[in-house]
Length: 211
Image (cartoon, rainbow, N blue to C red; front, side, top):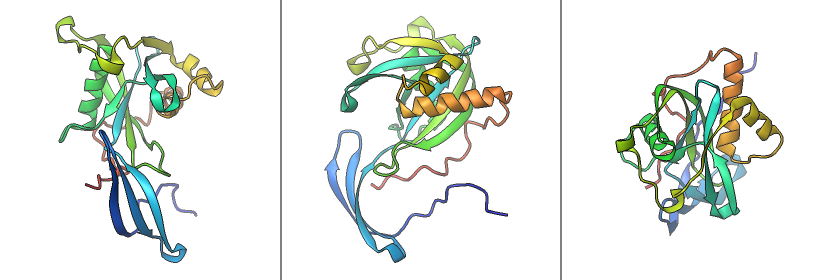
């Protein structure tokens, strides 16, 4: 019988690591890596702090989306509420709840872990943890986040889950985290939500920051 299908975390020895760019949010490093029989290779990589996203599902099975301008691709993308893990010591599900509150003016009474994934493992260490939030209610007016900068006037929309699945399959939306999360949520819903995981499950694929 073959081994269970599961990624193997097994970092290869790093012979040298040079900071090429000390960025505003993340860094670029150039590292020499010993791949054993494959020899020593040099790779540039984005050293990323990691991020969280929230698939917030209301009682009508509509997903809460926000639209943001993403300059590297020159597109206004429909996305899930999301944010960087840039507060030291803050638990990922706490960051997710804060982002849902700040970007969509919502709080949720029920939380589960939906999935973990790498954003672009060929060139970035960014790992993203996506949560499923249900039992939604509006945040109190007096506690709402005042949006500014790129979030100023950000559209917020609720779209039926099945409609989103069709948008993914038709090629109408392109954000990777949104597409993965929507397809996972639809599959879990069709299974009666069996297989949902606790929010504090160990995040074993998340790479450490390189310093």
